[in-house]
Image (cartoon, rainbow, N blue to C red; front, side, top):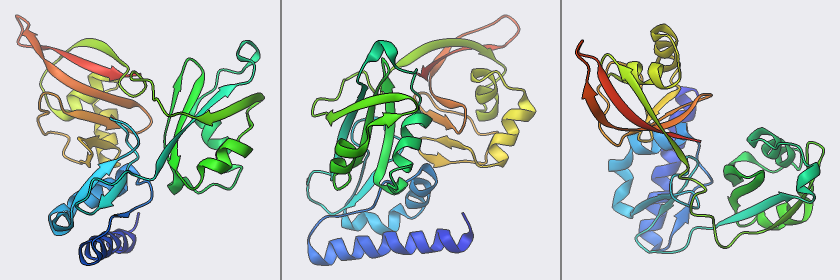
Length: 248
């Protein structure tokens, strides 16, 4: 994203905040990418006077809408359940399969939130205006026929499925933890920070040497997401035995 694009987006956030404040009604952004959320958080102090809430459909979503306004109004988000018509003959579906099928329907990415898979069933968060399109036209992903329905009760484990992982690291530096969790070299880890692919608690960071706090969530593009839980113990050689929850 260029500097001009970043400034334009920040101005848009400021305009929405001002309109919400002066008109006394809630206004919403489209679904924001992690980069866009980072931009919004950079100017949070300038817009939160209007009331600011981020939500993606359920707890833990990375793609979220921003609501400007002081009122507890429901977000215009629906969840679509996309399940194979015949599960035993279905392909093993991936996030890319479902997203590609929706892109083929000419649905704008900004109207789509996170996509989750649970037991080969897709759960798609979307803007309420595109829900009817998905219900009617999302009928196939790869070679698998799909049956779509509105999901009013989201499975509680959908976004919080984690796998506990214990590892030994030299320190709690961000690049050291990223390298350890994803089995990367220190140079490979450092390159992720240089390319602005690492987000800590929703904020993009190039500070690879910063110390990670307990319960911070680190998202690394193309690799995954984990929560640093705690230091469990220290080895005789001074290494740290740490526990993380890896999102699966």
